Amino acid sequence: MIRLSHLRKVYRQGGTDVVALDDVSLVVPRGQFLAVMGPSGSGKSTLLHLVGGLEPPTAGEIVVDGRALSALGDDEVTIFRRRKIGFVFQFFNLLPTLSAEENVAFPLLLDGRRMAVARPRAVSMLERVGLGHRRTHRPGELSGGEMQRVAVARALVTDPVLLLADEPTGNLDTQTGEDVLRLIKESAAHGGTTVVLVTHDLRAAGYGDRVVTLRDGRLAGDAPRSAYST
Image (tube, rainbow, N blue to C red; front, side, top):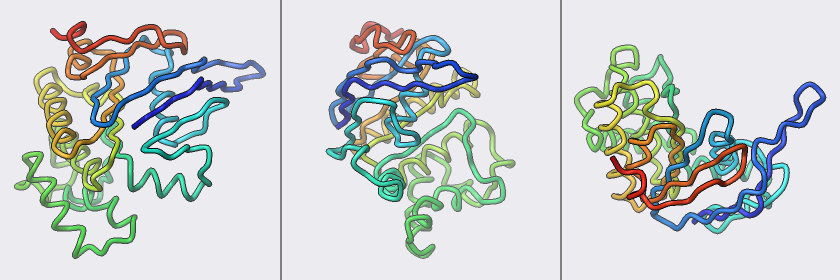
Protein backbone atom coordinates (compact mmCIF):
# COMPACT_ATOMS: atom_id res chain seq x y z
CA MET A 1 0.00 0.00 0.00
CA ILE A 2 2.77 2.45 1.04
CA ARG A 3 6.41 2.03 0.13
CA LEU A 4 9.00 4.57 1.21
CA SER A 5 12.49 4.09 -0.18
CA HIS A 6 15.47 6.01 1.26
CA LEU A 7 13.30 9.03 1.98
CA ARG A 8 15.11 12.25 2.79
CA LYS A 9 13.77 15.74 3.47
CA VAL A 10 16.01 18.77 4.00
CA TYR A 11 14.77 22.29 4.76
CA ARG A 12 16.88 25.40 4.23
CA GLN A 13 16.63 27.74 7.20
CA GLY A 14 18.74 30.87 7.47
CA GLY A 15 21.52 29.48 5.34
CA THR A 16 21.59 26.20 7.23
CA ASP A 17 20.34 22.80 6.09
CA VAL A 18 17.95 21.16 8.57
CA VAL A 19 17.49 17.45 7.98
CA ALA A 20 13.90 16.50 8.88
CA LEU A 21 14.03 12.94 7.49
CA ASP A 22 17.19 10.98 6.80
CA ASP A 23 17.17 7.74 4.76
CA VAL A 24 13.79 6.41 5.93
CA SER A 25 12.59 3.21 4.24
CA LEU A 26 9.26 1.66 5.23
CA VAL A 27 6.55 -0.60 3.84
CA VAL A 28 2.95 -0.40 5.12
CA PRO A 29 0.62 -3.18 3.91
CA ARG A 30 -2.91 -2.41 2.77
CA GLY A 31 -5.38 -2.22 5.64
CA GLN A 32 -2.75 -1.81 8.36
CA PHE A 33 -3.17 0.76 11.15
CA LEU A 34 0.31 2.21 11.63
CA ALA A 35 1.15 4.54 14.51
CA VAL A 36 4.21 6.80 14.17
CA MET A 37 5.77 8.01 17.41
CA GLY A 38 8.73 10.19 18.34
CA PRO A 39 9.67 13.34 20.23
CA SER A 40 8.98 16.81 18.90
CA GLY A 41 11.19 17.48 15.88
CA SER A 42 11.72 13.81 15.12
CA GLY A 43 10.15 14.10 11.65
CA LYS A 44 6.70 12.58 12.32
CA SER A 45 4.60 15.30 10.74
CA THR A 46 7.08 15.73 7.88
CA LEU A 47 6.70 12.04 7.10
CA LEU A 48 2.92 12.40 7.06
CA HIS A 49 3.06 15.44 4.78
CA LEU A 50 5.31 13.66 2.31
CA VAL A 51 3.18 10.51 2.21
CA GLY A 52 0.10 12.69 1.68
CA GLY A 53 1.68 14.50 -1.25
CA LEU A 54 1.51 17.85 0.54
CA GLU A 55 5.18 18.46 -0.21
CA PRO A 56 7.88 16.63 -2.14
CA PRO A 57 10.88 14.80 -0.65
CA THR A 58 14.42 16.04 -1.21
CA ALA A 59 15.39 12.52 -2.22
CA GLY A 60 13.91 9.03 -2.23
CA GLU A 61 10.69 7.52 -3.54
CA ILE A 62 7.12 7.44 -2.23
CA VAL A 63 4.67 4.94 -3.66
CA VAL A 64 1.04 5.00 -2.51
CA ASP A 65 -1.53 2.55 -3.86
CA GLY A 66 0.83 1.59 -6.67
CA ARG A 67 1.50 5.19 -7.80
CA ALA A 68 4.91 6.83 -7.46
CA LEU A 69 4.11 10.37 -6.32
CA SER A 70 7.24 11.74 -8.00
CA ALA A 71 5.88 10.60 -11.38
CA LEU A 72 2.75 12.73 -10.99
CA GLY A 73 2.43 16.37 -12.01
CA ASP A 74 1.11 18.96 -9.55
CA ASP A 75 -2.48 18.67 -10.80
CA GLU A 76 -2.28 14.87 -10.79
CA VAL A 77 -1.01 14.85 -7.20
CA THR A 78 -3.90 17.13 -6.18
CA ILE A 79 -6.48 14.84 -7.79
CA PHE A 80 -4.81 11.72 -6.37
CA ARG A 81 -4.79 13.23 -2.88
CA ARG A 82 -8.42 14.36 -3.18
CA ARG A 83 -9.68 10.94 -4.27
CA LYS A 84 -7.36 8.54 -2.51
CA ILE A 85 -6.28 10.14 0.77
CA GLY A 86 -8.24 11.40 3.77
CA PHE A 87 -6.74 13.75 6.37
CA VAL A 88 -7.59 14.29 10.05
CA PHE A 89 -5.73 17.05 11.89
CA GLN A 90 -5.35 18.12 15.51
CA PHE A 91 -7.16 21.42 14.94
CA PHE A 92 -10.08 19.91 12.95
CA ASN A 93 -9.77 22.37 10.00
CA LEU A 94 -13.52 22.58 9.53
CA LEU A 95 -15.00 25.52 7.61
CA PRO A 96 -16.75 27.63 10.27
CA THR A 97 -19.52 28.97 8.02
CA LEU A 98 -20.62 25.53 6.83
CA SER A 99 -22.81 23.02 8.63
CA ALA A 100 -21.49 19.61 9.64
CA GLU A 101 -23.24 18.13 6.62
CA GLU A 102 -21.72 20.70 4.27
CA ASN A 103 -18.24 20.23 5.74
CA VAL A 104 -18.43 16.49 5.17
CA ALA A 105 -19.79 16.94 1.64
CA PHE A 106 -17.09 19.46 0.73
CA PRO A 107 -14.46 16.97 -0.62
CA LEU A 108 -17.10 15.48 -2.92
CA LEU A 109 -18.10 18.92 -4.18
CA LEU A 110 -14.45 19.75 -4.85
CA ASP A 111 -14.29 16.62 -6.96
CA GLY A 112 -17.17 17.82 -9.11
CA ARG A 113 -20.07 15.93 -7.51
CA ARG A 114 -23.43 17.66 -7.34
CA MET A 115 -24.84 18.49 -3.91
CA ALA A 116 -27.79 16.21 -4.66
CA VAL A 117 -25.30 13.35 -4.82
CA ALA A 118 -22.93 14.55 -2.10
CA ARG A 119 -25.55 15.30 0.56
CA PRO A 120 -26.89 11.73 1.05
CA ARG A 121 -23.31 10.44 1.27
CA ALA A 122 -22.42 13.10 3.84
CA VAL A 123 -25.49 12.34 5.93
CA SER A 124 -24.68 8.63 5.84
CA MET A 125 -21.13 9.30 7.08
CA LEU A 126 -22.37 11.56 9.87
CA GLU A 127 -24.74 8.83 10.97
CA ARG A 128 -21.85 6.36 10.98
CA VAL A 129 -19.90 8.60 13.39
CA GLY A 130 -22.98 9.14 15.56
CA LEU A 131 -23.75 12.72 14.51
CA GLY A 132 -26.69 12.40 12.15
CA HIS A 133 -28.74 14.49 14.58
CA ARG A 134 -26.15 17.30 14.44
CA ARG A 135 -25.82 17.56 10.67
CA THR A 136 -27.24 21.10 10.42
CA HIS A 137 -25.03 22.50 13.18
CA ARG A 138 -21.99 24.63 12.43
CA PRO A 139 -18.58 23.91 14.06
CA GLY A 140 -19.07 26.68 16.62
CA GLU A 141 -22.12 24.84 17.92
CA LEU A 142 -20.27 21.54 18.39
CA SER A 143 -17.97 20.25 21.11
CA GLY A 144 -14.33 19.42 20.36
CA GLY A 145 -15.12 15.72 20.20
CA GLU A 146 -18.04 16.34 17.85
CA MET A 147 -15.91 18.51 15.59
CA GLN A 148 -13.29 15.78 15.37
CA ARG A 149 -15.99 13.23 14.53
CA VAL A 150 -17.13 15.52 11.71
CA ALA A 151 -13.51 15.72 10.56
CA VAL A 152 -13.26 11.91 10.55
CA ALA A 153 -16.50 11.68 8.54
CA ARG A 154 -15.13 14.24 6.06
CA ALA A 155 -11.87 12.29 5.73
CA LEU A 156 -13.70 9.05 4.98
CA VAL A 157 -16.52 10.37 2.78
CA THR A 158 -14.57 9.71 -0.44
CA ASP A 159 -13.79 6.09 0.57
CA PRO A 160 -10.04 6.81 0.59
CA VAL A 161 -7.48 4.02 0.39
CA LEU A 162 -5.35 5.89 2.95
CA LEU A 163 -6.24 7.90 6.07
CA LEU A 164 -3.56 10.17 7.53
CA ALA A 165 -4.13 11.45 11.07
CA ASP A 166 -1.82 14.04 12.64
CA GLU A 167 -2.25 14.14 16.45
CA PRO A 168 -6.06 13.86 16.08
CA THR A 169 -6.61 13.65 19.85
CA GLY A 170 -4.23 16.44 20.82
CA ASN A 171 -7.04 18.89 21.66
CA LEU A 172 -9.37 16.37 23.29
CA ASP A 173 -9.74 15.03 26.80
CA THR A 174 -8.68 11.44 27.43
CA GLN A 175 -12.09 9.78 27.11
CA THR A 176 -13.15 11.77 24.06
CA GLY A 177 -9.77 11.08 22.47
CA GLU A 178 -10.19 7.36 22.97
CA ASP A 179 -13.68 7.53 21.46
CA VAL A 180 -12.23 9.23 18.36
CA LEU A 181 -9.40 6.67 18.09
CA ARG A 182 -11.87 3.80 18.27
CA LEU A 183 -13.97 5.53 15.63
CA ILE A 184 -10.97 5.91 13.31
CA LYS A 185 -9.99 2.28 13.79
CA GLU A 186 -13.51 0.92 13.28
CA SER A 187 -14.41 3.21 10.38
CA ALA A 188 -11.16 2.50 8.56
CA ALA A 189 -11.54 -1.22 9.08
CA HIS A 190 -15.09 -0.99 7.69
CA GLY A 191 -13.73 0.15 4.33
CA GLY A 192 -10.36 -1.60 4.42
CA THR A 193 -8.59 1.74 4.65
CA THR A 194 -4.90 1.93 5.56
CA VAL A 195 -4.25 4.33 8.47
CA VAL A 196 -1.10 6.23 9.41
CA LEU A 197 -1.48 7.99 12.77
CA VAL A 198 1.13 10.41 14.09
CA THR A 199 1.06 10.69 17.87
CA HIS A 200 3.23 11.30 20.93
CA ASP A 201 0.74 9.43 23.14
CA LEU A 202 1.51 5.81 24.06
CA ARG A 203 -2.17 5.12 24.67
CA ALA A 204 -3.07 6.37 21.19
CA ALA A 205 -0.28 4.31 19.66
CA GLY A 206 -1.79 1.25 21.29
CA TYR A 207 -4.70 1.44 18.85
CA GLY A 208 -2.35 0.70 15.96
CA ASP A 209 -1.51 -2.72 14.59
CA ARG A 210 2.13 -1.63 14.45
CA VAL A 211 4.19 1.22 15.87
CA VAL A 212 7.27 2.79 14.32
CA THR A 213 9.44 5.31 16.14
CA LEU A 214 11.35 8.21 14.60
CA ARG A 215 14.27 9.95 16.26
CA ASP A 216 16.28 12.76 14.69
CA GLY A 217 14.67 12.04 11.33
CA ARG A 218 15.66 8.38 11.26
CA LEU A 219 13.71 5.18 11.85
CA ALA A 220 14.57 4.13 15.41
CA GLY A 221 12.07 1.36 16.13
CA ASP A 222 9.43 -0.89 14.62
CA ALA A 223 7.24 -3.01 16.87
CA PRO A 224 3.81 -4.70 16.97
CA ARG A 225 0.94 -3.11 18.90
CA SER A 226 1.45 -5.41 21.91
CA ALA A 227 4.65 -3.58 22.79
CA TYR A 228 2.72 -0.32 23.28
CA SER A 229 -0.75 -1.41 24.44
CA THR A 230 -1.77 -0.17 27.88
